[in-house]
Image (cartoon, rainbow, N blue to C red; front, side, top):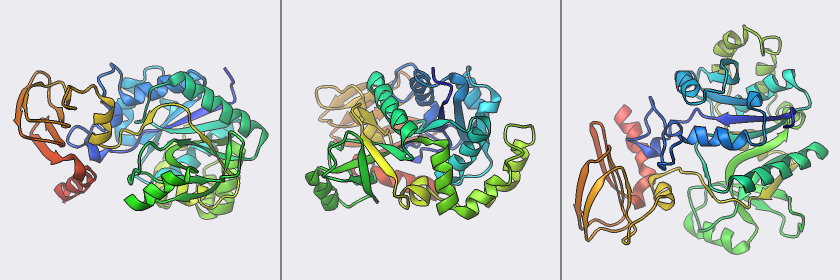
Length: 352
């Protein structure tokens, strides 16, 4: 394995659209959402370790999930777990990890990947990732893996690439925000739009140059901790300074501003498992398109539902179509799949 290859697994999210299974105390990345025998973060770690040395895989997470990470990833040492004392989106945590890696290995190449995505064809994923690493070895490039869209999804951002580019790796024209349905349909019809899956590849040199150029204030804030990184005083510096950084995504902070952005259209099967509906797509279904997790069911005039309960609970349904039915601890959720994006708002209101 190449000692210059590093990975950052981002595992700090709450996954509130998967409430009530995914909670602040126990988010979806630590659940076996598909009944595969492994949690989502375990699958992600295993997939990346096929190309990247285990000791070069860093986990970025909120400090409250430290014990969950160490419990579920026994090969990971405490110094590989980067603890965020505050929720600050993806740009600050990527900058922090990049500086820590640079101090250890200035020749490093990195992949940044979410902890909660589902990738079926792991061999093809590894081949795609190797292709990106090879490109970033030779070029000063900020790369992303773009996902081939299969329908006009309004829940994803899109990447527009140059139509005239015949190379396997395409120059990115621009990142596009989550569109409305008609705009999403026009994106698909154009043929040069990909879903933004949030997987990034670059050399540590290229990404830190970009932060210096586009986010000088944030860059200086984290650069002040240079002498602390990879020492016993690192966490103290982070605890004192991390919350001072701007709450901003890597897309908005860097990628949308940079001119050296490239995309490789991915050739593996991908699902972001962002909602109950996306989980429904991945699970086995009965003849009426119902997906069942753990429950024992008796269904009549019921179709296209997802039903998730504690093990062996009997669920009897008559006359429901396209619903999310989740029974977890003291919460029963019965909600139309067409409104699944609103579940996040319900969780916010309950907290108030």
